[in-house]
Length: 173
Ligand code: 5GP
Image (tube, rainbow, N blue to C red; front, side, top):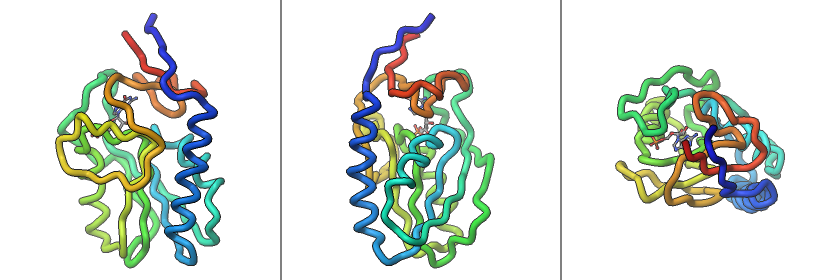
């Protein structure tokens, strides 16, 4: 049985979401925002974030990249499993990800989205794990930074389990 050590409590997640939602609302005031959630880990984060935004025009879509499976280390071979349906040409796009770690997944997704010619692309991540970054990816909005450890809960899985946990835990196998 793995050990679960609490890292970010539900109240703290909510407080951070309120903080970044205010920043995003101010930055995109009067503009249409296309939010692209990265499946599956960002589903709870996106759901909570979008309900706090004070913007009139928001569209939501999803992308999915290949996952770790039952592994806890990043793969360098990132495959796009699900593409977006909305037209982002000339639009302002905010990619909403659970964790940016090495940055390889986000760099691949951004490269893909840029081919659709959006007006702008920014990145919002629940957790920014900067210490392990391999490619330059700038996270514009983040709830928090974590230095190390494999995290589960609040959408984050290990082999598809634990996404339903209400807080974020460091999982020790
Ligand atoms: P990267 O390509 O930046 O190394 O990894 C990004 C992806 O790996 C994220 O989309 C996320 O799904 C997954 N990931 C990175 N760190 C963790 C972690 O601590 N826990 C879980 N559950 N997934 C992680």
